[in-house]
Every structure is written in structure tokens, then in C-alpha cells.
Image 1 (cartoon, rainbow, N blue to C red):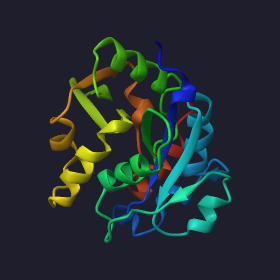
Image 2 (cartoon, one colour):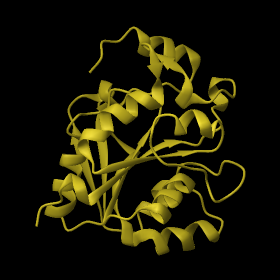
Image 3 (cartoon, rainbow, N blue to C red):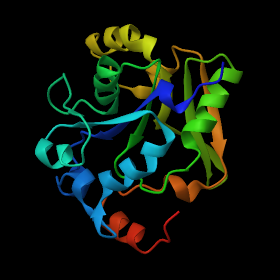
Image 4 (cartoon, helix red, strand yellow):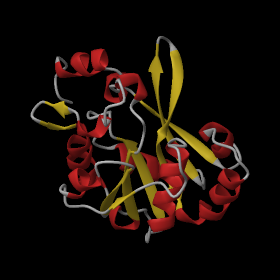
Length: 202
């Protein structure tokens, strides 16, 4: 049976400190007239059955986007895995897909291709990747995971570990290569945000 959009919950990761951007809330930074997180929401929504946001501050601003907003259960901004854990705890579908809030041009067929690869390889996690300077670079925050991995991730996080690639390596993981590396360009700094403004919309 194919993995249909209705079987997937989308999670926008907007829970970081934004430390490389001077501590601002990255997801709420303006990009071409609306927030980065709103760009992510509009791009992800048609690809999945429902969407939620993981954020740790300015919750009202995210709630105004019309989707559920959940903060990390763990304190002190422990990173994207904490966001994934929050998403899996709240997910009511068999699959969860994550995208970060600072990459507004991710592929329009991201979820469909991750789902097809997950199924074809009988994998538990499907992760995006793209060529960068001649090297295939994985994008672990663009991943589709089976919701049943909740217990595994909970054990991993409660053991004090935080590295996303170490956890994904514990499971059957398939890497899906996308042709357009620019689609994964993310704004980590104000300079990168300015660079993003000058790029054409994907």
C-alpha cells in the first residue's frame, strides 16, 4: 500500500535559539513579505495530511498561522531531535516528516519521494540529500520517520544523547538524493537571509 499524504503529519522545526542570527526567532524573520515559517507551512501543507509547528517562544505568533504549536518537552533548546521527539509524541498518523523553518524553497515533491523510498527499501527513516561541492551531503532535518520510532528516540534522548545522525544510524535509513542543492539553502545567519532574499523562489 502506498504512503499517502493523509498518512503523514508534517512538522516544522522552529524551536532553535537562532544563535547564529543574533538570537532572533528564525522562523518569524520576514522573507518576501511573510515569515520563513509561513513559507515552510505553505510549501509543506499540500504534501501532507496535517501540519504542526515545534517552537519554544513567541508561541502566539506561530499559533496565528492556524496550526497546532508544541514546545520541546526537554529544557534548554536541546536541538532538532527534541523537536522530532515532540512531533512523534503528538503525531496521530503512521508517519511524521520534518522540515526546518529556515529553508523556504525545499522541493515540492520532498515528501512523495521520501515516502516512495522508505517503502521501496522497507526503511524506518528516509532522509533527503543533495550534492554540495561534489559531495553528497545528507539533510537530516528533512526526514520522514515511522511514528513507531517514538520509544527508540525517547530512550536515546533520555540517555543524554543529542546527535541526530547517531540516532538515525541505529535504524534502517534510506538516503534520497535531490538534484537541486539550492532547494536546501537555509538562512542560519542574517547574511544568509539576505542572500535568500535575492534568490528566485523555487
